[in-house]
Image (tube, rainbow, N blue to C red; front, side):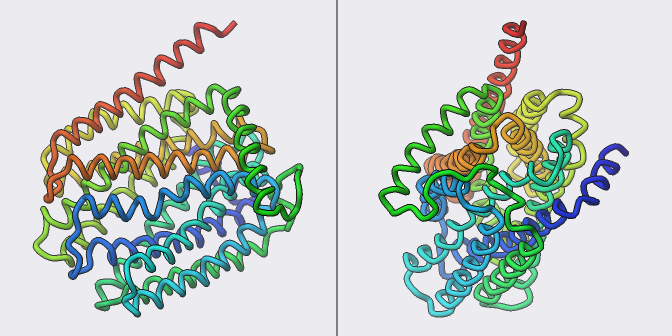
Length: 426
């Protein structure tokens, strides 16, 4: 198969393999850590979780990325990205250990969230740096395949890490702290693997500005850098269109994620353990969809183009989400989890490729940080909207239909933009 052949070519590249290993360890740790937080916040027997509580937790953990994200982009365009992977993962390992101690100590929720936020805040630098570094280890004509393999493999690693965390939860009661410490160990492994990459290999190509800006200088650099990055993005129409579509699809994904959490917690099970097991199975089905997207996306992009494939993913989701989700039964919803995994990851692979190939390297870190901000704001807004629409059992036909309409509008938007581009092309 052409995909298998292309993957073999990529895996022969030593620097690509090392960068991929950093991603795998780092995102496996993310999966472990996120499951530990989810079980502590959502599935703890002493906590009565509501859609509003889930939305509040997501806001606490994700909204600050909207502030951190722009700073991450500006600094990533000045810092050596390999050093970001080394020190960032070392810092996350240390902070994760602190979170484990706080879980054991049963501290107030605000202190726990502050610790968890510290870990996930560093994640913005690492993930944006991984995306911006990929063009430095593969040729331009290999970017689509590399984006199919690398981010998707990272997502699968996060899924595997989450599965391992679920297993530990079943083997031992009150194991949230142990799971968090496992995540800390994986962060440490990611830091050690990054040492196999040359210090200056991953760019940025032209490091500008001051090496150690003060707070005031950092704020000024951030404002000016983000303005420059947005102007640069505005001149790259295809990249801007892909980011817009991906933001809308992320909103839909967030709304359905909250729905699934509530269904697992209250509608499909009588206790927290059974609900957690169902959530783990759903995560597995979604991971299978991610894998399928990695296999078929390079070929589909070759046939439809990047924006054409994002359009197809959104259109398919608009039809299949209501067809499967309106039953509110485990079987159809698991099938929907697979479909959404395929559609979301397929669109993300194409979006990553568009941004990497259309945006200049000196601006790539800033643009990927904008990408992260849009992702997180869309997800939190989706959680907030879901909290207003969802009943306690998670069964809302209105929400399912609304999500389907948004997917359809996204497909129509990209289709019209594609027609306009073809009409104006000389």
